[in-house]
Image (cartoon, rainbow, N blue to C red; front, side, top):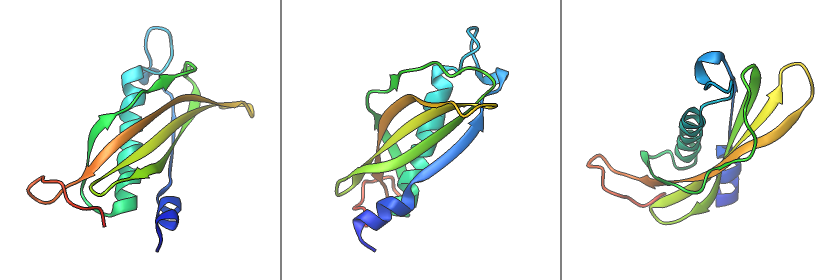
Length: 127
């Protein structure tokens, strides 16, 4: 399978409902919760691409463009955007949807870098 097919096959989409226990005093999703969900989505994407042990080594600029209100549905999408010899990057976007309308817009986006590691936690080549 070539690189483009692997990227396509590793695209990851996760849906979550935004419940009050994940929101702040403004009734919007905590930024830290959004980042945790993004890192998890990126990790799954990186692992599906490489089928190797992967660890997060950095997150690039994360843009919070729109607040994510309680009582909405979020869709997190992850896609590999860069492939190095031992590392790769995954872009994650969060889209917010109203539960009872067709309204949907991008709310947050960011990029995460992962490194493939061996049993001793040393970097290894991505196969």
